[in-house]
Image 1: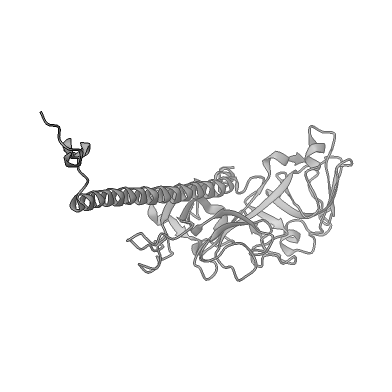
Image 2: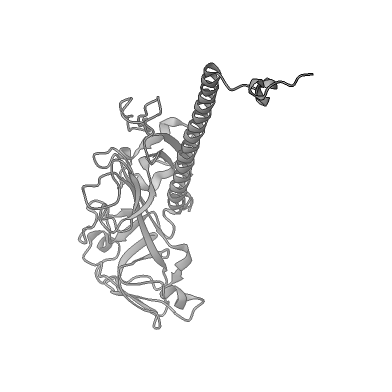
Length: 372
């Protein structure tokens, strides 16, 4: 058999039937890879958006829970260590005015305060961890500038050490023959070793003078504590220089001296857009209270400090939390919903997510006082 010349032989690859990709095959492969990549990218984008939405929803949930907890605790404590009204400093008609001579209710509603239409609330109560009885050995005149305690009794020395100038001292006089009275002074200095807390002279305030006049004395033993006078409000104005809130990031604020808003106020919770409060009132003439009846719930404008503040049985707290950023890819535009007597915003104004939370809180100390 004659061998085939070398120049006539086919390559080994050709002899085995192996060949390259055609142009059509390459284009089909690229198209399949493109569709697969696009699908994977779409899935990644969708999951990323869902994760972002979940983060924003969780953030709003946390903000609502914390804000509700802060408000609920303070409302439940309102009136602790008082008889429902307080005489002395910090009357409500003209906050921050030292010459103010109005009674200070333990709950003060501020309905639709400011241009933003949100409500505010002031609560007054004594700190339960700092309760002390004043000394029975010292009889103070109504014009006193000091209240004396026994530093050697129980843990009074440690409690006295918690006071400093500028704090508020609240004393409940449950033995006054004219009825239970509550007084509040501004602390000017503290001597923890002697048990003497120096306070402002309240004798020039007419509400105080009406219950503890010139020539009269305070009851020797009063139950006293550091007073908390807290006002909760929404700050969404970044042009007033008073707080961190802005239209883009409203903040729930805490004021502790009834001079709000000012630079000393404390930011509590970010991105709380609205605070609305309603009140269930006990009948003015006595009788049972039915907070299941919607007719017994009123807005803050119907609660007057002079006659209704000690009738507040329950407080309904409504909050709107807003996401910390807009979601422009969301096809559904957002708008602030209406809450209580605050009407909602026009539809389609922004792309924020929002959540609403409402809870009802019993004002237990006022209930207790009403049953005394």
